[in-house]
Length: 136
View 1 (cartoon, rainbow, N blue to C red):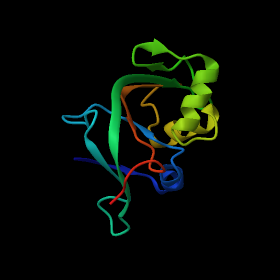
View 2 (view 1 turned 135 degrees about the vertical axis):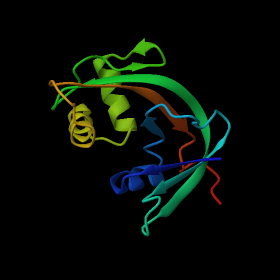
View 3 (view 1 turned 30 degrees about the horizontal axis):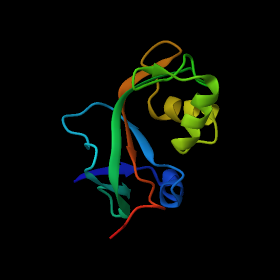
View 4 (view 1 turned 90 degrees about the horizontal axis):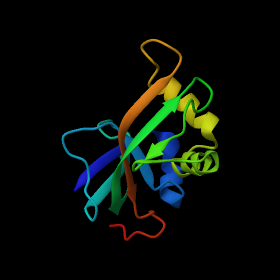
């Protein structure tokens, strides 16, 4: 079982099932398809809340590039470049209102050390939406 923590703003979307994915930096061990995930807000704080448990559906490489206000290049997911419309849908599936909202979040949370773009390479983890998952 692998646990992931989310900012409070993503809790309602995770609970409703409209957010069923997360973008994470590489680490020693991520979830594997079929493995149970525990989804939290505020993990390692006194405000920790288990949102639910769900099965991991997939883990694939992701590459994102943002300027301060929008995407600076097409998103690459699982080795394929997304169209602009697919990028909008991707941002919404990740809990954002728009690509601009997503870019602003990344800019605030992960500002570039230098330059005017953020390039991130990591993994995209998708799970069975909580609205359809068996939670215990």
